[in-house]
Length: 182
Image 1 (cartoon, rainbow, N blue to C red):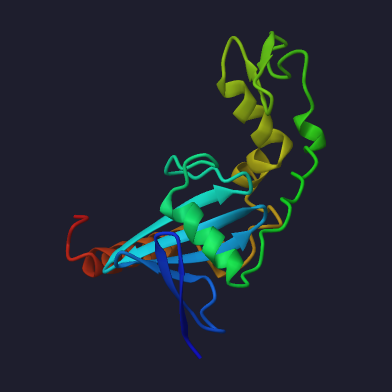
Image 2: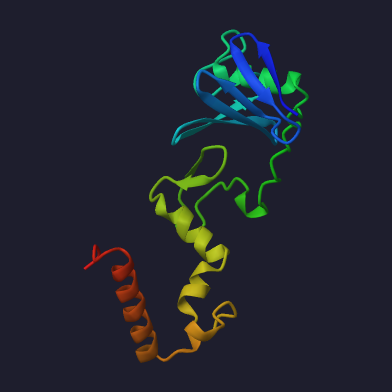
């Protein structure tokens, strides 16, 4: 069952299965509520653009509560036609205990700055990544040939078998890409 509704400048067709599809000026807008925002996919021919609109009617394209854009109007029509409202955004996950605000760099004991999310060593910004790699086991994975995550056929090959495998994989990739990677 299909019905055509008018609201403002938007014209839409709504079916039970297609709720969320809004048509206007040759464009089709697909509205999806998603964790506190609406994702509006604008489609015309082979052009596809996705815009995020928050619950306060602020759109990525610049539309706002006081000046509605077509994406905000599509959401209004979507809700008026029985569409589901976006849920309240889930709270952010608790910060990792290792991301606590440090007073000094654990690598060089120098001063650090804090950007609200991660710390940064004043003397060398790479220290954060070095510390993070060591504290999350990346260094052990890269340097320990018997690391528990290194299980399976690829890791059990001899060096010659691995080189042959990688050469064949590169040859197949080159063939797939039409010889672009020679």
